[in-house]
Figure 1 (cartoon, rainbow, N blue to C red):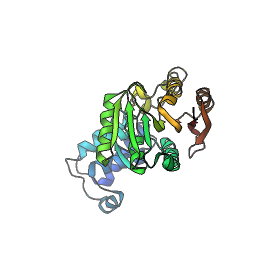
Figure 2: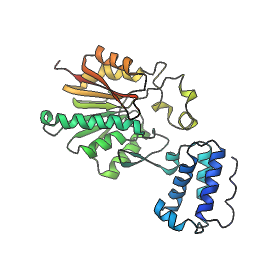
Figure 3: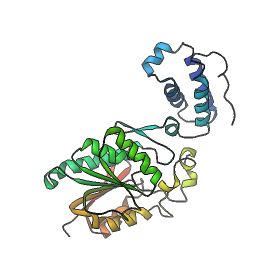
Figure 4: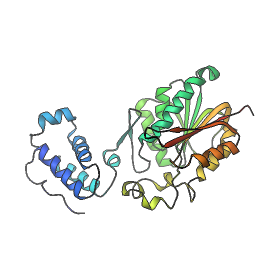
Length: 295
């Protein structure tokens, strides 16, 4: 790995921040300025406000190698969140590792729709809605829903035991009572739910090689690939979900920007009613929802 320059000797926080930014820019990191700052903050343990007060101070000698190592790793396109070990979702901080996808703002659209539905559903389920999060990954969706709708009974499943270990840790951090199940989608799921949410793998196999290095080289392939068409998981979920939904219950799934027509068709074919799309803040199709009828 090419070594950074300017990290030798006594340097101020401001000097090291400039060195970090220059290195990341030279290695094609799009948000070099932001990432160099976040890594400095992570190592030094202080906020932006404290930095402005101490920017001219000399960085402790023992912190410099740690900052340089993180800068070099970020320069090799390891995602920032894997380096700091944290990501934010719905205002909550979550631990992330290379065993789970990094939570993204796009998925907050799904969380928002789920919360709206649960609020409407309260009268039917007497404040005890049962929620299932399929393909939970870091658990960011399940934990957020439990924290925002505390009376709901939340279960979360994933095929990856490593991902479930991360999710359990995130639930434990917030004291969120969630039932975790190691399962290949509905394989080991029992009972009926008022709401099933999922952000399943949905990227077409032929698209993955063209993704950013941070994604294709570092995020788990198991959580990315939706097969040749990108629809493998949607087909299974739409086919099997009705058996696990109470009448009037909802299925909500995150989708790719060009997948609404296909996923809506799958939901309609499997008896879902009121199928509709929800767009994210950029105006892209992001969520497909449907309601199970009284069948």
